[in-house]
Amino acid sequence: MDAAARAVAEPTRREILHLVRHDERTVSDIAEHFDITRPAISQHLRVLADAELVTVRNEGTRRYYRARPEGLAELTDWMAGFWTSSLQSLAIEVEREQWNARKKKQRKAQR
Amino acid sequence: MDAAARAVAEPTRREILHLVRHDERTVSDIAEHFDITRPAISQHLRVLADAELVTVRNEGTRRYYRARPEGLAELTDWMAGFWTSSLQSLAIEVEREQWNARKKKQRKAQR
DNA sequence: CGCTTACGTTAGCGTCTGCTTACCTTACTG
DNA sequence: CAGTAAGGTAAGCAGACGCTAACGTAAGCG
Image 1 (tube, rainbow over the protein chains, first blue to last red):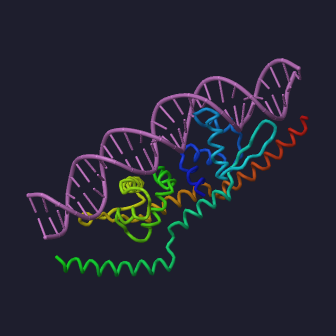
Image 2: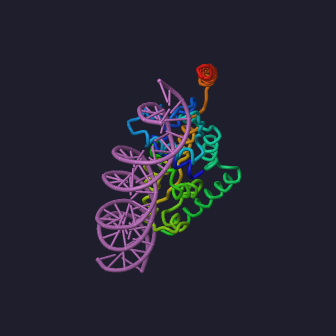
Image 3: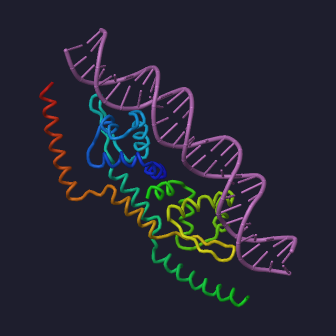
């Protein structure tokens, strides 16, 4: 999951993901969309593959990459769940507010 | 948005976000949870603030940081929308499959 | 006023990263 | 078979990144 987050942090890799989101594409095909060399694309694809955000299909000398929807879903789910406030935490939040209010009153009284 | 993605890629920053997700906390308070120095935390907070993922509230010499829900929501929404397949793209997908099927048959015929 | 507390900022450092160039492997084609 | 097309890999380099140590700053306190 850490790998996925780091992989997506790179603008070029995000563009690549966008390219292979629906279509599967070869490395050269992808490389044409950028100003960087093909090896650089290969390296980005390796990072994305390690993060399990893309899959490969071999056909002769060509390698077809495409986005792996499950990997992307896992990432978004994880991100969304990262800061969702449950009822439990909401209750704690209310308690914290009250605590702060008391504390503020105390500080005011001290002056 | 790019800034937000890069900010979240860092494990320490994710932990910080988690800490100030519901409570607002001071820098020293946050720093206690880590093995790195306080200035390092300050720098991480700067990155998070630049990415508009946290907000600050000054109170005397203390600075209270807390997560900015809107920023987090924007990020997750953007990530989720990044690869959601609309009906439009689904139709394209089907068409692509058919095109591939034809192409495969053609290649087979060529051999 | 000087002292302390709570932070931010800067300089410098080792490490990681993204990129290019050069090379190697593998599969197709004549 | 040699030649070519497609793509992975390695070395090396410049820049970004994360961290620390040292210093600067502003607010509270005696």
